[in-house]
Image (cartoon, rainbow, N blue to C red; front, side):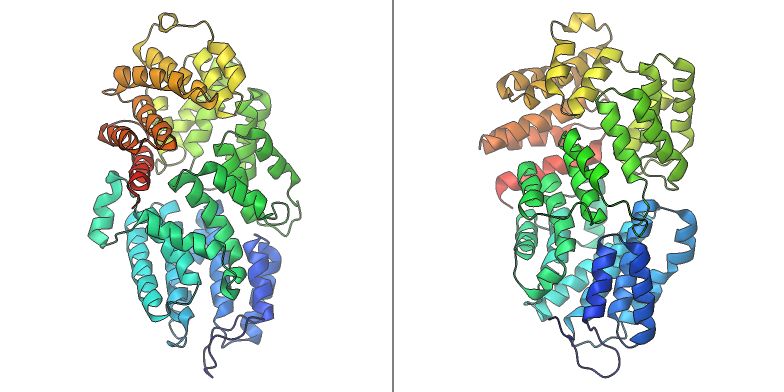
Length: 485
C-alpha cells in the first residue's frame, strides 16, 4: 500500500487509498465522480496536498481537450493558486518540486492551446529546472524519470522554427537519454511507477510513435500491456489517435465505438473529429459530414477547426455540391486559429481558393485510411501527362510514392519520391520535404544511417514550405536516432 511520503504535521503529500481512487477516476477521464471525490478530500484532508494535485489534472484534461474559453477564464487562475498551495508543502518530500513541475507542465499545455506560447515556454523551462533539481536530490524517485525523460526527448528534437525559444530558455535535451528514462518508468515495478502507470501509458506510446518512429512498437505496447481502452477514455483517446495516424481505420473505429458511454466521462468532441476522418478516408462523404458538422457545432476551441472546415469543403466538393463546398471554404478562413500546421495549410488553401484534383484527392484519402490497394487502382495507368498543372504533377509523383511505400515496395517508392523532390524542392507545397523524410525513414529502416541522415538533412534544408516545423521535428528526430544521441 502506498503510504504518506512525509510525516510532517502541517502540510503533506499523502497518497492514501482515497486519493489513489480519486486519481484513478480522473486519469480515466471520469471527471464527474473524480470531482466529487476530490472536493470531499479537500474538505476532509485540508492538510493533504495530493487532492490539490489531482484537481490540477481535472482542469488540465478539461481545458486541453475541450479548449472552452469560458472554462479557461474561470479556471486558468486556479493553476497559480494550486502552485502556491503545493509550495507550502514539506521541502523534504520528493513531491515538493515534482508537484510544482507537474502543475507548470499542465499550465504550459493549456497556454499553448490558447495561443500563449511565450508563457508556455517559461513554464516549461521552470518545470525542466525543477525536475532536474528534484532528480539530483531524489535520484530514486521514479516519477522524475517519466516527466524529465519526456521533456528531454521532446526538447532534443525541437525543430529549427522553435530552436530560438529553447536556446533563449536555456533548455537542452537528449532524445536517447529521455527515452531511456521514460521506457524505464513504463516497465518499472516501482510502487510509484505502478501508481502513475496511466500517465506513462499515455505518454510513452506517443513518444515511441512520433519521436522514435517506432510505430509498431507503440501499438504493440498498447496490446501487450492490455490497456483498458473501454473504461479509460484517456488511453482510448491516445490509442485511437495513434491507430488513425498509422492508417489503421478499422481499429480506430473499434476503439471509439466500443468505449464506455457513461455520462461520468468528460464529454469531448475528439470522437466526432476522428469518426469524421474514419468515414472520409473510406470516401463515405455523407457520413463524414455528419460527424464533422457535429464537431464544429460542439467544439468550443480553435485547434483543427480550419482543418475540419477544409475537410467539410472536400466532402461537398466530392459530392459536386460546389456552393456548399465554397461556403465551407469561407468558414475555413473565418473560424479557428493557425497554431497547428494542419490549420495553416487549410487557411493557405482556402485563401488561394485551391481545389485539389478530385482523382488525386480520392487516392490520398484512401491511402491515408490504409486502403492502399484501392488507392493504387485509382492511379494505375496514369502518368504525369494526365495532370496538366505543375502542382498536380508533383502531387501525383508523391502520391504514387506514398502508396508504393505503404504497399511495401520501397525501391519503387524511392524512385517516385526522388521525382517529387526534383519537381518540388523549391516550391511551397510540402510534398518534396515529406518525400525526403520518407526516403530517410526507408534508409534508416535498412540501417543505412549515413544515407538516412543525408535525406533527413535534405528535408530540413528545404525552406518556406507547408508543415515546415512538424516535418523538421521528425527529420531532426531521425538524425538524433541515427547518431544515437
